[in-house]
Length: 610
Image (cartoon, rainbow, N blue to C red; front, side):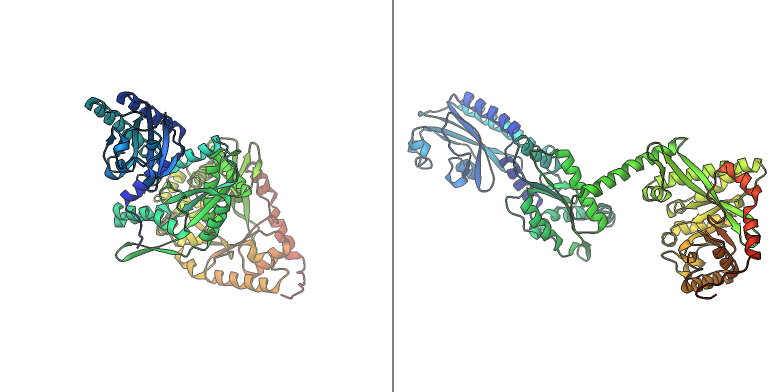
């Protein structure tokens, strides 16, 4: 079970810690309250303080020779207001046993002394408002009342300093805004040396929100509040090191670089944490951290925070406990993000995305059985962008759906144009699991096809990411629906990566596409030849149409035809063609001539035999 400070205690310590730090604008405002108190009491001297659990911090002083701005509480005159939580007034401090030993009393600088505690709504003494005079003095009741009013106003102001925008409501810790204020202060003061911003991630927030669905918000908040004390304990943070609540479930420290390296080593060795969130439910947590080195004299605060976040996300992405900011990786991620934005704009444009079509050839007749629509992107500045890059950019975003819809719309439009020219050529499109998982995908596709005056047999579906499809019941349901509506289903890249024969019966497949890695070495390697031959034989016994892709030489095509492969696709027959090139290519009948040559030429003898 997580243990730590109660929320109220955590907030109290956080408030005192924040108030102890220097803040020029805040302290200037406190000075105004001290001078006002001096006026209403009709005395010469004043000072105003804040506290933590050990020290008093002088924020402003007037006409009193106070040498130190940080004094242990037990040595101060204000300790009685602090501990008693009440105003203390002494007309002659020389006769008061609480004060007569104080150096400023002995020297005659403070004979009259009054101190009012500044107490917040939760009962915490945030500091004291004090006035003094070098002579014996007795204020009137009206002066004392007004003195209390000034102290109350100063209290309200101090409360606002640490509650409005600077304290995390859930944990009571100073938040990201306060962290950035501290970094800005270091920048303004041109603090020398090398520092580090280190950000820790304690829990995947989507997972946390899912937990709240079953356990309730209160149980989740209790767990989240415990992360701060737990992290401080596990990292053995120094008492003077401030822990900031960066965002929900994430924390940060601002330390010198040497200490950051020490913390990084500790974080790398942290064991897995098991958090008990209810009586019988535990979850395993892995803490990730990212940190960035910076110089307050030279670096921009906003940029350093961004780099710290970048380092943390890289740590999570790569499943590495701790990572320092890497400018090369960061540049690549930024470039990818810019390219992703450009892709979203390209979908809206009319002159960047386009389709090319690669023919699929029957290895028996040489007839073109169809074409595969392949997406291309001509970036206005970068030129042609690799299709692999396009997919990598879009696959984890909603842009994948937008791209698929763009391809479907473009293919249907092209099919209509070809039909008007008398060309009846089925076109296959690549569809990912994110598309299949969208309810209604199949019915929507059918409606679009039929509305264009086409048939479902005119559009074929190439199923990508097979293993992900198998994990998604909605995707399997949409595939079944597509099959029912008359669409031909192709399984792409069979033989590459995860290819378990058992899943073939779970997906309504018509055509199996053999990946080029399975067939590329059949003419030179005995093992590849045996595997390809037996895979094709098995698939044919299961009554699938078998299509080999990436065919670049006549001998490979000849061997695959002998093994029973039905169709082929590759540069031997044709590169991907523009829509305008398709009519002339069909008229040329190049595949038929190639297959005729294959049939008449003697078969080559291979080093490893047949």
